[in-house]
Structures are given as C-alpha cells and as structure tokens.
Amino acid sequence: MSQELYFEDFYVGQKMNSLGSVKVTAEEIKEFGQKYDPQPFHLDEAAGEGSFFKGLAASGWLTAAIVMRLRVQSITVAGGMIGAGVEEMRWTQPVRPGDYIRTEIEVIGVRQSNTRKDYGVVRTRTLAFNQRDEVVLRSTVNFLAPLRHPVQA
Amino acid sequence: MSQELYFEDFYVGQKMNSLGSVKVTAEEIKEFGQKYDPQPFHLDEAAGEGSFFKGLAASGWLTAAIVMRLRVQSITVAGGMIGAGVEEMRWTQPVRPGDYIRTEIEVIGVRQSNTRKDYGVVRTRTLAFNQRDEVVLRSTVNFLAPLRHPVQA
Image 1 (spheres, each protein chain N blue to C red):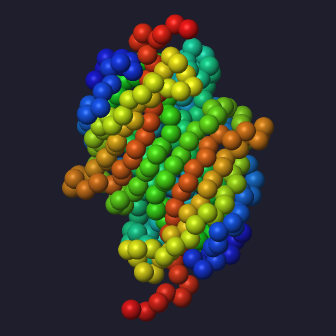
Image 2: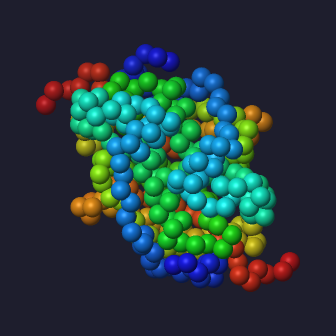
C-alpha cells in the first residue's frame, strides 16, 4: 500500500498485512540488548540457557520496534504515522535468533480527535507471528491520521 | 539498588527512581529511526520542520526502549526482569535531540502468577520526564519476579 492515506480512508474491519517478513538475527538481538535491555538472556547464548527463556531471546522492546517498522511499511499515512498511545501490548512467545516476523493489522475503531480537529484517531489491533504462525506479540495501538477535508472553524 | 529482588521484596507504594538521566542525541534518534521507524520526522531535521512535530523527534519506540534501560538499571530482579505485558503507554511530549530522560517508577500491584506458581506479577506505573520535568511517556507495565520461597506442589 503506497498510496498516502487520510483519516477518511480508514474503516473498521480494514486489514493491512505486512508485505513480507523480517528475519531476526542473534547479532541484532545482542546489539539491541546491549543498548536498551542489558540482561543476560538478551546478550549471550550461554547465559540465556540458564535463564527463564532457556536460550537467547529478543527483548520484547526489540520485537515491538520491529513490529513498528512493519507497520510503517504497510500503512502509509499522509504526513506520517503519529503514535497516539498503546492500549495493550503482550509478548506471548519468545522471539529467537533466526525467527521470521510478520504482522496482521486490523482497524478496530475510527473517531475524530478530541484535541486536534484536523486529525482523526485510528485504533488498530496488531498480531505479530513467527514462521510457525505462533503469535509472538499482540497489541492495541492508536495513531493519528489527518483529515483530507478538515472542517474549517 | 543492586540487591537482587524477589517477589516478596515488592510492595504497593514502593518507589524506584532512575539513578540518573540519559541524554538523547540526534545521532541516536536518526539511527533508531532508520532501523525501526523510518519516517521523515525521525530521520532528518529539515524534513521534521515541515511535519506534525515541527522538528526532529525521537520515535516513541526509542523513548520506550530508553525507559526500559532505565528500568533494568534501577530494578534488579533475581534472574532478570521478564516482561508480562503493557497495560497502557502514552507519549505525552516529543523527545528532542539533547533532551535528558529520567524515570520514576511506583509499584501499584503485586499478585501471584496464575500460570507460573514460582513467580509473582509486579504491576508498575512509570513516568518518564525530560530535563524540564515534563512527562514525555507514562506507562503501566507488568513484570514477573521469582518467589524467594516457592510453595512446593
């Protein structure tokens, strides 16, 4: 979907799947872990073995960041996608080195913004899957989209 | 706080502030943006000027990742901090190059895990502030902590 979307283009039930899937590497898991989530099971295979995760696993925040990249690739909002908050996010399976992640997004609500009369709020349900079609992350996230025809005050 | 904490060590009203604040640079904003949130206002000062943000701004997911680093530095859970989901997360102010971010975390709930009898769930409220003491992110996040004295089945 490369067309620029305005608020009027979104509707409940609309589905926007990621165009492809992205591979998560051990290198990316460790690099992100060192920068933002420096815990043994995100840094080192051997340390991961003795942990809750029984092996190296991606930080949940890396998974969330990868899901964001898939979102901006599959939904082209006019002027850019402005986050309007997360209502829920769950990590339901560990993400491992070599996993491929893809997303399925569904619009579950559309409403005018209370604070910005030239924007609407699009509420979305995201499911991120690995290559075995197991859900690794699910979330409900809102974003702003500009009105194509804003009402003049 | 460098002591390893077990579930029994957490209580409602407990406060854990970040030890210091971290500076967010234009370089980090652009690097994260290129990898995970490739939109003009996260990549380039000039492109940011004409956008919703009126300048370069951090991806909300970079802010969330920085907040995670501050969390793991200020709360040392035995065996590591295992995320058990986000109930809410809001970005309330843009994060700009040169901003300094710190966090204040308060425990707002503790309960035994339904699925893992050797773990408890700690519910926390996080506020992230910039150097002007404006809240830039607020969230309600749960994590697992192991029981020091698990009940034997």
